[in-house]
Image (cartoon, rainbow, N blue to C red; front, side, top):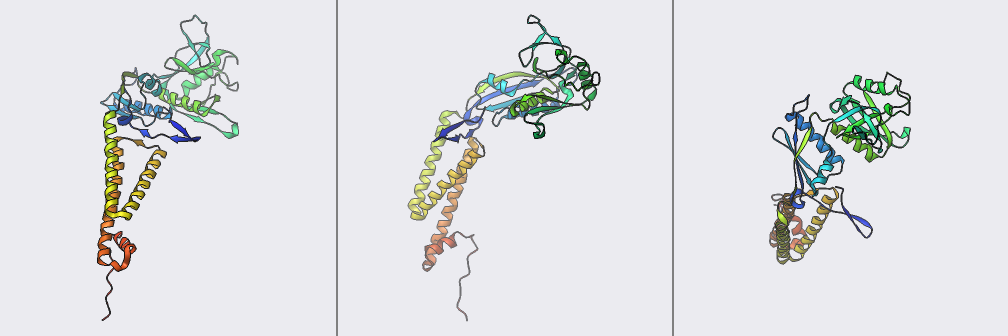
Length: 364
């Protein structure tokens, strides 16, 4: 899912991005389900689609395609991802987010125990805040506070968060019950302890909080993405996952490439044979134009599809057509006024038709 590069003489060489029709990939189909409080309609499906797109982009999937099919289905296409199970992990977990109070440490044989992010076992109480109670989550940093990143949370209502943190703040500093467990897909993604400055019963005011820790930028970003993704109004079910091969097939792609190369070579031979030195210079200029254009598209990270490649070849063909028109006009100008020389004929031939200079006449 990362961008592949090769080393050439110690320098990275960027590979071109290929679309699903040329490279193949994975197709996933999700279906929204009703929750106890929200109905899975078109609006809820659109919100889920935006969350999945943010996850795919933030977690490194290159140029994913996400569309809504009908009212409750989402089709996701991931170019270059050929393992459906890997694709499901990349898109992320789709269960709802929940904030739980910690009831204490759990024994290894306890069936209700949940393993935290550090490998310990915790016993959790009922969910105090569900995922739809989170308005936003984002990674942040401040050089004045020192190096490191944290995740800021904004809640829709202040009261549930203040009650949850106020009850936990009444516990001793090293007590596991002073922690707040953030659970996604029945797994604890973070269980930070409350700061000692938070008073008992008062909780954290303002409807916002910060999850601090030894986060790198990528870890803080991924945690914020998962938290925002967990704030789905409805759950999602993965109803289909399959690998999609290149839609045109390897043989068709090779045949298209050979046809394009053969057409360009024959056109170049024709131009050189008819216009000689001017034609040769034109072919060299067109080759430079094609290489520079291709390098610019690769450097910008453009995705190559068969329609896009056809447009690229068409642009070169239009440039060849423009050269033919200029050379024909230059030939006509040279035949009409050979005294001006080849340079003058080329200069007049490259002008816009109808913009010829008037022929000087002798004074009366």
